[in-house]
Image (tube, rainbow, N blue to C red; front, side, top):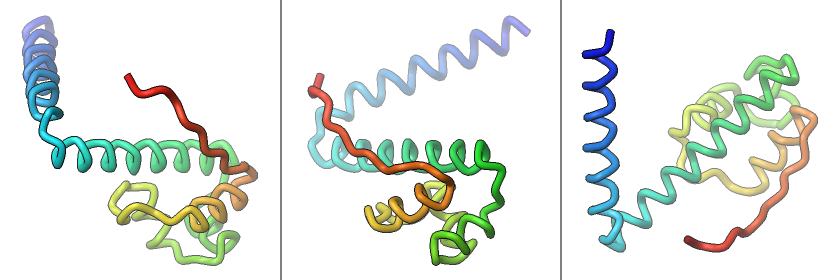
Length: 105
């Protein structure tokens, strides 16, 4: 088991080093942060839907969209989702959309 853990840790360090190097490229940085935002949105929506005890189809009906759209949104494969869509899905699961800004590091 220790061999697998140390190999995974080495791969993680290699990935972290790659990202740290590539993030200096402005185009990479834009795409990286967009992908991370989509992933964060997707994760938050999946967790909210599960806490609400709803299926994707139920959320879709409540949000006036389709289940495949919810699936793509939750999978992070939908292009950057619109704020109105995120707002409708948040309301469908009994949540409120809030947007905040944090100081850049």
